[in-house]
Length: 153
Image 1 (cartoon, rainbow, N blue to C red):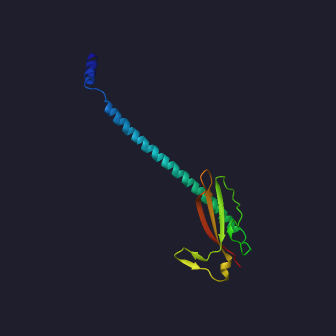
Image 2: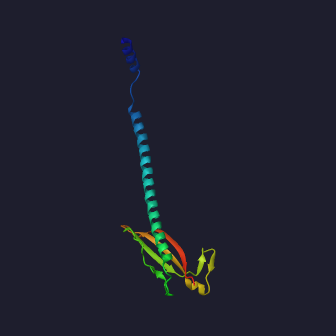
Image 3: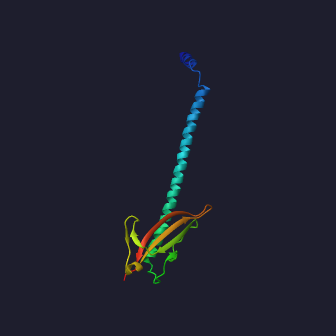
């Protein structure tokens, strides 16, 4: 047993411990890793919040469009403008909705637009539902979707 203690003492004689510079370098590396991790977690949190907001706004807009599609076509020839169809979806307090109805002059993208002519053009409406985020900052758009509605005869 005595020889075991002498061996241990000889083994520890060569060790001097760690220096202050080694400790500072280790703490600096650990701090840099911590900052990168915290930054990535913050970015992920913001991304999830934005995605959740857009998903909720899309669901609100789509449900309103479904109700508008099921509503009867307005008999009034001048049924155009903002909020012609009543908002029937229960909106959370942080959102507002604008429904814009207009008669399109053509259907399609700007580059490939088919002009509407004749009496059938009177029975087509382009309906745009836009969802806005309200709050301390000014209202900002979150989601907008458009569709066409026609009166069948």
